[in-house]
Image (tube, rainbow, N blue to C red; front, side):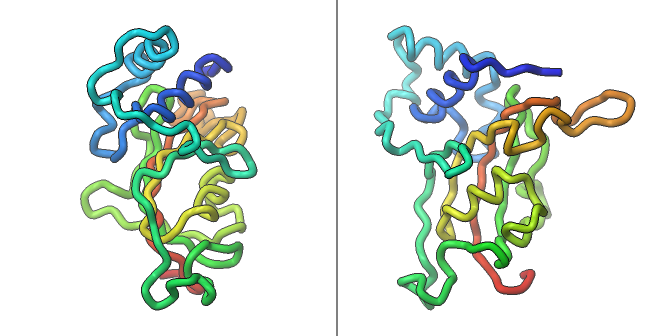
Amino acid sequence: PTRVSVGSMLLLAAALVVGLLPTTPQQSHVLGRRPLMGTAASAFLGAALPASADVKVDPKAVKSTKSGVKYVVVKEGKCPIADPTGLAGSCLPEPGQFAVIDYTGFLPSGDVFDTTEKKGGKALVFKIGSNQVIKGLDDLVQEMLPGEEVQALVPASLAYGSKGVCTEGGECLIPPDSNLKYFVRFKKTALVPA
């Protein structure tokens, strides 16, 4: 099983803060785990960063859900025109409503393990608060506005935990204790599955 040290988590969080993680799923091949760790380590050691990382990111831009998912908003969302204040319940999703999202999940290595973004792919629709997705995604979506896009770091405890996603033969799509990166685009909420 793959173990992620506290140091690796801190480096990943730092990379998230300074904008080194890909901002869209199509860019995922650009930065794998080893280059990410090296670049993040360079940032901590004061070495020059690549031109793409020269953009200053306010550390206050990194948000956290109550459960511990760290995320950065890549694209701001907003309430729908029909409910600009959110009073009709179409802004922030609530348990019992259905969330409609596009997402791409990345292993610590940077490899994609699942996505709705592939050609012809359909958005994921799930009932919030009913254990239909991993806890980290459920919690994250409840803090997003329609149209919002985020890069998130979901700790193993809020993803697949110490079991991972493995066959009886021991092969694992998601190794045990893996902290996962996600690109999530929150499309909308619905009272019934869309």
